[in-house]
Length: 477
Image (cartoon, rainbow, N blue to C red; front, side, top):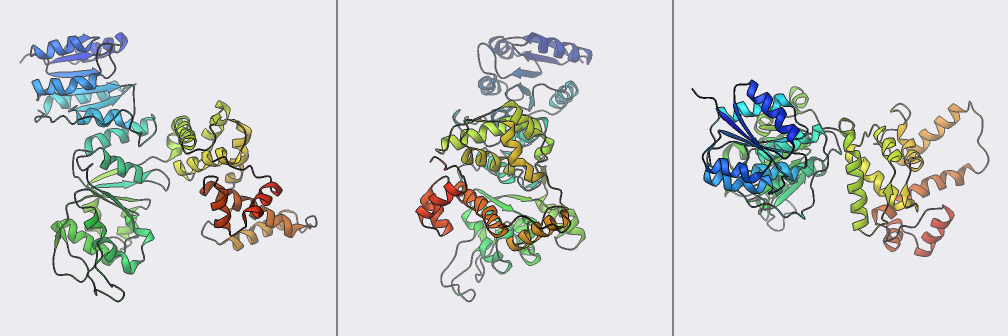
């Protein structure tokens, strides 16, 4: 049996040499070129059993060449490699029929494994899908190895209806990933409906999901359309699925098994034409062992598991994320700012227990509350210093404000062995509460002082006076 032939197109001579040597040692015939035109000529002549192509080449974009290749030779496996390591690159490679997408720099063993699998598994005819607009906003940010793996999984899942279970700590971007699966998938023209299980009262969950008929229960004065019906033809994102009560889990399992649902108080069934994506920050296997989550529902939802990495596992992405958040803030009318490398280094030294959400909030705070055009390490350190307290030192987030203040004062007196603080403690405590309260309201209202005053229940002139007294920088709208 003759050796399989691998066609390689990459404008980097070093990469061509490395791949040529590695694949030749595996017994393959290898042909290399630095242009898309030569690759197209070889493919047109019927040469090659598998293609490895770069995206950016001097004469043509490799992704633009894919539909032509697959129209001519639909069974030819194509591996796309690119240094443009974004989710859009990965998804577009999959949309246009690539067998595999590998980011640069690549792992040579991974390339060899992809080649073996591509040659061993004949492809069905590929259907090219038109590319999204180049101006489309990136849904996910990061070039780290951890994010590249997420992009590759996304690219493989977008054109399927497989149920996906997204796990990860709070603030890692689970809903962003769910939206990317929808926006780049075959249901992109349908609705994306998100529902947070933890935010719905237990007694209303079934009505919220499946809807209800008029008179189904006390207070049901009219028919209500549930989230399943709202999501018909699209995607239903069930966030914090671990908080769903057992009785609602049973109904959800029945929908997944039978593909239809019945509104509360109705006898008529409705086909459930939706793709389900679920997410949780909890360990569902532990909940199953504790009898809090149905094991059969877990396996129905966990068809394709995706774990999102916490920010501490992708610290190299902080620079890209910060630039993205600064750009977003400027686009929303806030001040245009830049950040020093020393400040970014200080951020990379932080633990980020709140993950990407914590980073985004920090960037918005820096833009909103500081007048400096360039954010330095001293400002970042000042903002992060309070977050360095250990759990033993900090009051629980679930405690109310009075408990937190009480804890703070007890900790102060204990640390000073009963020594009394200077006079004026009452006003100092009020000021400490007032400043973050007003600052947070200004950030929430994006600098609109009228809305901030309304939110605080203050007269606008009173708010202006407080801004001056507490030395809070007014946010430019």
